[in-house]
Image 1 (spheres, helix red, strand yellow):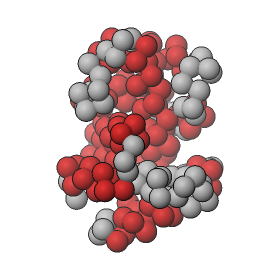
Image 2: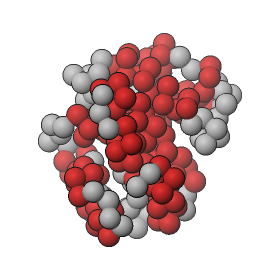
Image 3: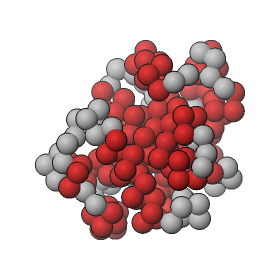
Image 4: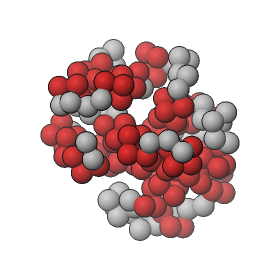
Length: 183
């Protein structure tokens, strides 16, 4: 399944445009991290785009988040390995059990995407005015983008050092900034 098919699939299950943009952003970060790590860019991007496909179906029941997504994805012929990674991304159920690079990066990408977008928004919607220095500073401010879990972002440090990861994530988001409604 290519990127456009992945986006079409999430649009069948997600109506909230903010959530769709979050999924696109997570996918962009995953793609660029995969490139950096010489992994499967298309596969990692697909995982990022599809990771919250079940979010509106679970009606807030986080015990179902991920498992419902896996079922949806298997129904649509997604690779079972990718569907399993998406099932396990629910950190409320699986925190501390991530061993694969793709799982670790997904945890970080899921949170850093929101932090960087928030940085862009305070720059007047100009993601192009955000730098690694900006991200590093804002990451230390606990009240800034408070929903972005800094502990989940920090999980990536043994795989990709944080300042480097910030740059990779920013590059990924810059690539799709128009789709995110940013400059």
